[in-house]
Length: 275
Image (cartoon, rainbow, N blue to C red; front, side, top):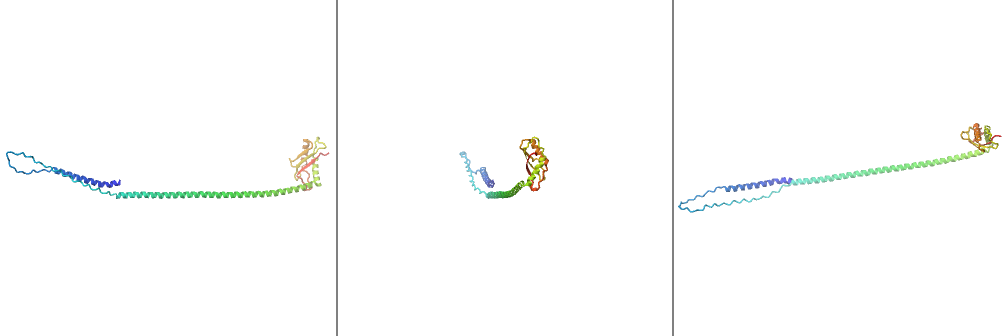
């Protein structure tokens, strides 16, 4: 568009120059055609017979040839402004490309930095999770060790207690056996059985060979613990069993031993009705 504007002025001047030349030539030709021809003066003697004279030939002058129009070479268009504009446009495009490349590099750098931070954050979280997992495993290991240590300690204490209890039971059994075989134990059991027989209302169905085995629990005070009385007789006679149970309840509290060592919590006696 700029090149056309620059060529318009010289082209217009050339056209005007040609029009002026053609106009001047046209005016000159018309002026030559209308110039009046002045007749020449001729002196002659009049005679009777006038010879025929041919009319003067008017020589028509040839029309002047138009001067050849020398077409001047068109001036070289001044495209310095166009070149300048093109150079500026090229520079603007180049600057735009450079700026685009710079922005792209900056974007790539920011993206790389973002990805790097994401990787670091992901790795940090993994490291923290791994650390927490190690701490949980260590805590669980210590807890299991504490549980195992406590279990072993409890097992040791249990075994010691069981050993002590067994030893006490052995000692108590030895003492009981020794007491049972002693005359004092025999007298103690006889006194208990004698009191129960005195309180026993033997039914008429019992015979002379009736034997009832009674088993019950007593307190150190001699009181019989309710619900612990068991009676088994050699005769399947419910009335006989009930009468023996009633006798044991009626005899509570039972006679006390002469020595605390003779006390027996669980008593088992063979009862026979008094003859």
